[in-house]
Image (cartoon, rainbow, N blue to C red; front, side, top):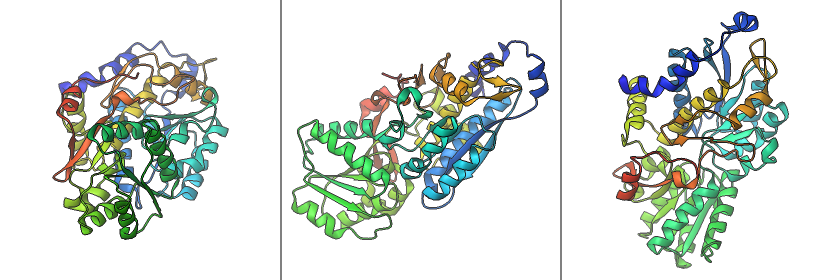
Length: 409
C-alpha cells in the first residue's frame, strides 16, 4: 500500500492545489468526466484488448480514489469493436455523441484506420495505447492532428529488431506479413529498416488472417536461404509460422514486433515458440518499485496474470497522462464551459502536459507536443524473448537498464 500511495501522490497534490471553484463548477461538481474506451473486448483480438481495458479500469479506480478530476469521478464509456473495422467505425461515431472528453483505444491498426476521420472531424482527442501501425499518427498534419499514441509505432520497432538481427549475424531475412492494414504497414517498415542496413528481404510471404498452413511459403523462404523470419501479424498466424518451421525441421529464429508476446503465439506454438524475439516496452517483472506496485495492484484487482502486459501497462499510463492533461485545463476561455470540456482544449493540454508523470512503462516528460503525437521513443524499447512459455529479457544488460525508467529522446 505505501508504494501505491507514493505513485498516486502527484495526482493527489494536483487535486489539493486546485483553485477555488467558481459557481459553474459548483453546479457541475458531481457530474462525471466521461472517457471513451474502444477496443476488441471479444473476438479474436480480445487476448490483448481485455488487458488494455483492464489497465484503463485500474488507473481510473486509483484516480477516483484520490478525488478524480477536482471532485468529479472519471466514468468510462466502453465500446467493443470486436476487432472489426466496420463495428469500430460505428462505435466511434457513437462515442463522439456521448459526451466523452477524449477516447482511449484501438488495438488493431486496420480497425483504427477506418475510424480516425471520425475523431479528427469531431475534434475529439484519441489516444492509442496498443495499435502500432506507423500511419496512424501520420494520417493528419501533426499540428492539426487529434490522434495521439502511447504504444511504440512500427517505424521504431522494426529498426530496433533489425539492429538486433544484424548484431546477431542474421542478415538473410524472410518477411511473413498478413494482408491487414497492420501487415501492410509493418512490411513497409521492415523493408525500410533493412534498406537502411543495405539489406533486402530474401523472401516475402503474404497471407490472410485465418490461414492454417504456411508450409509452401516456409519452404520457399528456406529455399531462398533465409536465416531468420520476421513475422508481422497479430493472431494465431504467428503460431502457424512457428509450428510450420518445426514440422519442416527448419531451425531458424522467429523475430518480430510485440505480437510475438501474445498468448495466441505462445500457447498456440508451445515449445516451438521458445527463443522467439520481439520488441517490448514493458516486461512483467518487478524490476523497480513502480512496476512492482502496478503488477501487484493488477493481480489483486483481476486475480490473474496479465495476458499481454504491454497492453495493460501502456493503457494504464495513458489514463494517467490524460488525467494529468485535464488538470491543466480551467473553466472559461481555456476550454471548459459549465463543466464540459472542449476538444481543442484537451488537445492543447495533451500537447503541453505540465507535470512529469512517473509511469510504469517510462517517465513521461512532455510526451506529446504540437508537432509530435507519439509518446514512445526507441530508447524505451527492450528485446524480449520467449522462454518456457513466458516473456523475459533477451539480454542481461536490458534487465539491468530496465531498473531505471527511460525518458523520451
